[in-house]
Amino acid sequence: MDNPFTVALQQIARAAALAPVGKDFLERIRTPEREISVSIPLSMDDGSVRFLEGYRVQHSSLRGPYKGGIRFHPQTNMDEVRALALWMTLKTAVADIPMGGGKGGITVDPKKLSHAELERLSRGWVRALAPVIGPHIDVPAPDVNTTPGIMAWMEEEYASITGDRSGATFTGKPLSRGGSEGRERATSIGGWYVFEALRGKHSLPRSSSVAVQGMGNVGGHAAEIFASAGHPIVAMSDSKNAVYNEKGLDVAALQNHKKKYGSLDAFQGGEKISNEELLELPVDVLLPAALEDQITARNASRIKAKMIVELANGPTTPEADDELLGRGIPVVPDILANSGGVIVSTFEWEQNLAGEHWSETDVLGKLRTILEKQSALVAAKAEGLHTDLRRGAFTLALERLEGAYRQHLLKKLS
Ligand code: NAD
Image (cartoon, rainbow, N blue to C red):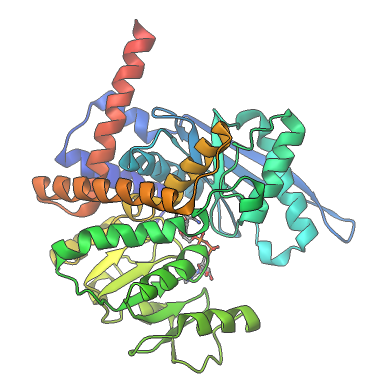
């Protein structure tokens, strides 16, 4: 697997080669402002104690407090968290929201923990990192394997340690605990807004067939949203395998099956295929919504989708980008396509700080306005530079970040 941080640096270099930025700024943006690695003690239900590795990378505060999710995964490590933090900095800049970029995680398989162990571990992450997070410093959120319930534990732990009752340190909380309307579906619905904003430019049909890799928070909601907008979902996968039905899957039935049996095995409404086969299906739209490093030099030449919308972070490598650009397959980059999550997280933070609660109509209306505007700007950048949408989005982000950097520098030097 490619080192995701190396991939992220390569992506920056490729954008900067087309739209040059200052050397000093480039060095600033390539280097995280702060990286913290902690050892979290966890008392297990059987009375034993384990020590788990936890992380927070605070990549950039040029445009606002650090912002980014916390991932619980057995393969999570500092390089992955560092890459995800850098992508967050670029994402908040593309969305033009007043936030910086950060990311956190724990190397753990949460499926092997009991509910009580998971709660103690989540609270342990907060105890280890409370001194460096806070509503105006660093505002974490959910990511792979972390849920609204986990955010509620974390916010509660933070409040009990610091006395801060604003509820604005963690976003993605349940509605009953200060969460925002629309947050749970925000990443996926945002992906759909971006897709609709760019669909016409790439001559995709009003009813486009869709394959979705991953059926967690992002993939699951995306399948529901695209299907209800008239785009048949022909394939979906979890981490083990995939199901394909050329005529369109019954998304609700598939999700119920997965909930009931914990796997897609024995689902009757489609043919079982592998995750690799799902990526190579002849569909209009491919939605990677699982993990990094899925579309690479190894399989890019076999991708048959007419458009890829990256709901996951980092699913496509630069080598694959080149192959897909050469074959005229547009890739809507993660830093634009999945930015709906952080945008609505920012709305949640604003609501918590102001003691307000906005309606879902307000939240989604504001989200759509931002994403339509930024999608058009990204597409215009890409066209102007005769390049792909990723480099269009990266150059837009770098331009905004460099503006903030020069202002900071002036203030510091004056
Ligand atoms: P999740 O834990 O809810 O779901 C992850 C899904 O991916 C699960 O269905 C899992 O079975 C599947 N999966 C894991 N490994 C896989 C593999 N090798 N092949 C196929 N499927 C696999 O996580 P999520 O919150 O839905 O996040 C998914 C992606 O979206 C991640 O890249 C995450 O960083 C990104 N993202 C999430 C948010 C958010 O708001 N949750 C926001 C922006 C981006």
